[in-house]
Image 1: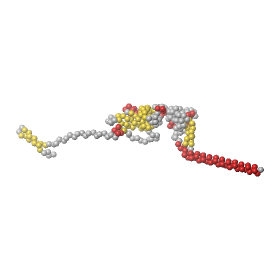
Image 2: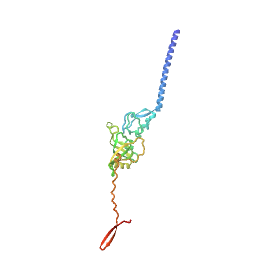
Image 3: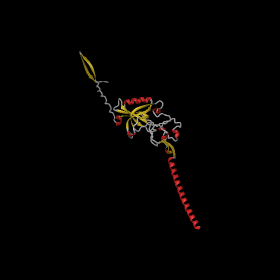
Image 4: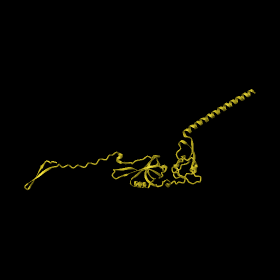
Length: 281
């Protein structure tokens, strides 16, 4: 009997030790996981749920409820204008549909600047502010330009009284509202090509652009996001670019000054005799 009791006690102690070992390992594992989670939270600020597109959406596409899904995103790196609730994207009554204003790739966050406001048109009418006009111009521009970008426009042409051509900055910070579409297979990284770009401008700017387009070539330069720096007058001529200093015009020849002479005249009968004398003044 005592042997059985001792055996049971030994088995019980072994099981208790095993249980303590397993419990200790479980506790250590949970502590390590908790510490790792705390470290991640400290770096990311925690995770929040935002909405992304679950398929590629091109400019002008209707944004549907089945096109979006929630995903967790680090709080410290949240883009501006994200959507946290599906109700903020879609009205429950189905009215006020949103359209894509900028192309979005799969799992890209949906931002307010990339979709229209509920019920807003995706075409040009929805992109033109009061008092502005949409004007399409033929320019030399890079293929990475997108609607919503802001650009400077330079004019190059000939000007009377200037040797060769000159380039001048004629418009600053114009907003692109549409541009011709190039298939992705034909695009290269930043290739400069002839493009039709539609910008939002004032009626006065329309007149200047029409005149510039009729008298020379136009080139666009992308303005960095958030760059509101003032740009002064920019004029570049061929001579200035190459550092050529024009020759000064030759001086006009100076006529020789005639030497002053003085004389007196005396009459002898019918003859008049002129006699040179020193000039007194």
